Image (cartoon, rainbow, N blue to C red):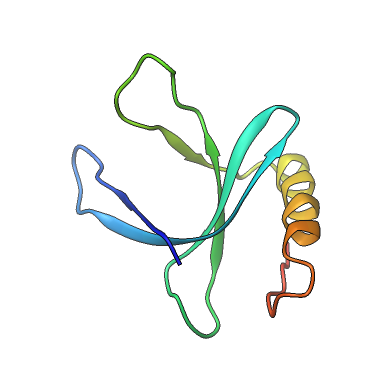
Length: 87
């Protein structure tokens, strides 16, 4: 599984494993988890990057409607995998 590292300006670097990537309503999203194996909590991150910028900018999705749309997309993408998405 591919890893992504976040390095906030004022904090410690955090690594996540990318479970899946999808596009919903023209926006790119990542489904990530903090562990590669076993039960884990997952986050859906929206890519808010500006094409001209060198570094990517991701924002955690917290809006219920946006989360539901993304969960549906990832559910379809992960069909057949041993992953359960709960909102």
